[in-house]
Each structure stands twice: as C-alpha cells, then as structure tokens.
Amino acid sequence: LRQLTTPFNQEDLVSFDWGGIDLNEESMDWPHKENSIQYYMWKKIEDDYEFIFDDDGSGEVADLIGVNQDEKAIYVNLYHLKYAAGGKVSRLVSNFYEVCGQAQKSLKWKNDGMDIFRKLIGRTQSTAKGENRILKGDVESLKQLSQDALFRKKVIVSLHIVQPGLSKGDAPIDILELLGVVKNYAYEVCNAQISVYCSE
Image (tube, rainbow, N blue to C red; front, side, top):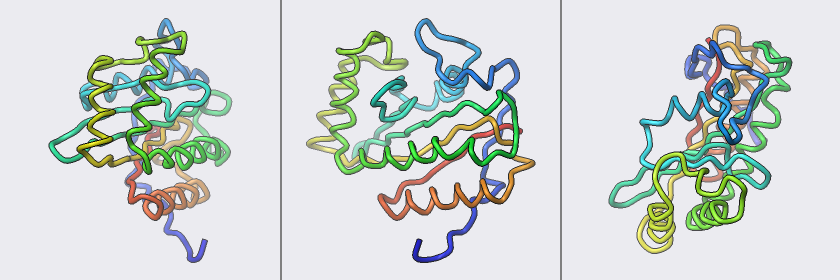
C-alpha cells in the first residue's frame, strides 16, 4: 500500500441474528440445507433483487449473485460467504482471509460485465444443479441481461462479505484493518462499494 488505509467503520457492519443456523455449514447445496449460511442469506436478500443466482462451487464468481437494473445500468451484487472456524463467533482474523481474497478476485468480472452473464448461462447448462441455480428469474431473463450488458448498459458491481463468525459488538482492530484494505482496493480498482455482514 502506498498509504495507510482507514480501518472499516465498525458501525457499518451489518449484524444479523443467526439463530438456528449451523455456522460450520457454508453451502446450501441441492436439495437445500435450510440451516446453512448460504440459504439464510438467500432468504435475507430474496426480495431485494429481480434476479438471484446460486453460483456456489468450483470456478464460482460468487456464492450468491443478486441483480437489479434500470434504463442505463445493471447492478451486480456479489455475495461471498464463509463458515466460522469451529462453528462459533470469535475474534479470529483468519475467518476473513479467504473470503476477502475471493471478494477481491471477483472484481475482475467488472471489466467485462457480459462475461459474468455468459458464464452464468454456461453454469445452468453444464453443472449438476443446472437451472436450479437460478433462485429468482429464469434463463431467458439471464440471456437478456447478457445482451444488455454487451450492447446497452454499463455494469456496476458491489461486493458483500458474509462472515457470521464475527460479532459486530466485539470486532477487533486487525479484522477492521483487513476489511479497510479490501474496501480501499475495491474502490481503487473499479469504484466498487462493499458491505460486511456478521453476528450481533
């Protein structure tokens, strides 16, 4: 870094009550595991987007992808999830290393928005989950998003990091500093915003 990075503001952490969720269970798989972190987040964001995709698995863009659009832009929200070490809330910065790396890596898709949707179309055709990956919307709307991203609309990406192994009220400075680096990186690389979801 060329300069010191401001730690992530603790007050900006978004906390949820994860009661009934196994914090060791990251993926909802198929059929869906309703006690998983991914299933919980899907239900949390279900009404927020017009299109939602389950991209969990090898070669994923993100675990969950939520999409909205208007006349000029397509807004792609990339949700990166990680289980909590030991299945419990702690002060471990190691809970964040991998998920932060995944979030940063996924920003490469910002440079070619159409490629995101082309990849997702391929996922519906070539994986065991197939079209079941589409949690909201359908294949035709996915194809239309791909065309719009190529010819008509710019793509705006936002990052969402989900780690219920952190307590908002007890967030240590090393985790906030790490998240501050990710926030700075996302802004510098493609003017992307980030949100962080944790436990109360």
